[in-house]
Structure formats: C-alpha cells, structure tokens
Length: 88
Image 1: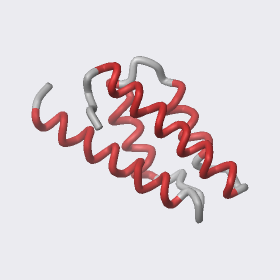
Image 2: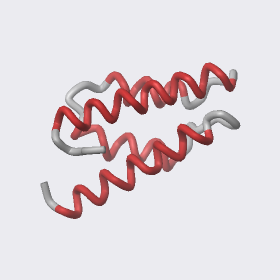
Image 3: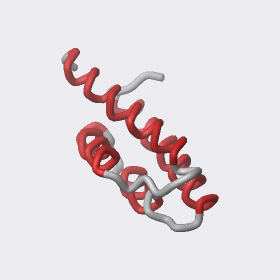
Image 4: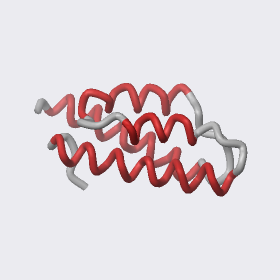
C-alpha cells in the first residue's frame, strides 16, 4: 500500500474517532463522516460496520447514538485490520 493511501486512511479513521466522541453530544451524520466512510469502503471486507455507523450517526437519542457509533467504529477498525489497511 502506498504511503498516500495510508495517510488518507489514517485521516479517515481520525475523522471517525472524532465523530465517536462528538456522538455523545450531537448527531454526527455530517459530510466529513460520510466522506471518511466512503474512503474506507474499499478497505473493509464487510460493509456492515460502515452502514451501521452512518445509520447510528443520525439517531436522536444520545445514549443509543453514542453506543452504536462506537460499536460500529470498532467494527470498522477490525475490518481495516483484516484487510491490512490499518494497524492500531
């Protein structure tokens, strides 16, 4: 994998990490989150955590939103690890 790809993946992961923190206070169905998910799509063997994060990002209820966004983010990290695109 090229260095530029690793940098892009790292930035996308950071955007999602920030969204996990923000999801405790507000909805995080934003353009940066959507773009980060799109960047990570080719590097995740399974799509479900990406879809779950996007759906949870717009939940009205803060506790459910935060829990589901966090869980989906962890699933994304597992998927990126499986593909070799990310090492934490």
